[in-house]
Amino acid sequence: MNISIMQPYLFPWVGYFQLIAQSDTFVLYDDASFIKQGYINRNSILSDGQVQRFTVPVPGASIHKRIGELCFSSEVGKILKMLKQSYSKAKYFQDVMPMIESVFILRDRDITACCETAINGIFEYLGKEKNIIRSSSLDYDRSQNAENKVLDICRALMATKYVNSIGGRQLYNSENFAAKGVVLKFLQTKMISYYQGCYDFVPNLSIIDVLMHCDPKTVKHIFNSFDYVD
Image (tube, rainbow, N blue to C red):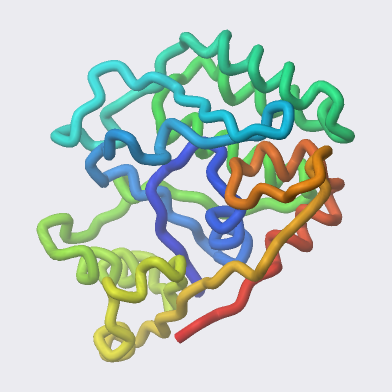
């Protein structure tokens, strides 16, 4: 079985969804400490051709708290207004905005619940189902270093292959994984571009931008535009 593990991010960039798309099981690592100024609760979109940041407040956020202990604020009116103003003329606005809005106003404000709802909503829109679980639901040794935590999660899920984003190449050793019967691969996103309603393409935006401008077939193609690297 092939797994990937990432912290819960709200509508992150496309590389995150490529990890999910190629996984048999995707683990939302809600045991991690909250990172301020990270991408758990914020990302960027395009508004009139300019990059704009959106941030969902997290009351009581602290690096001393686990992601699974925290909730998003319900004060999201300004963000929704910005999204609607920025993408009202986008080709697929009417198709995807209701799903996006339903995540922002979700009654359960738990960070992981909102992020999981967003992931499921996007893959349902694409006609796919994904198996997503929380790390907090698993029986593994949380006292170990980062690599051994991943290996113990692989053990708990009987995984035979672990895929990480390319940024993790300095963190994990393929020989250590092989010794536990797990193949280690890294996912590298290919060069991606699509029409954004302006002349110069802006990369690495929230998946919201992709969904607003691309039909489901193109989105699925983008999700598969990656290479595995040892």
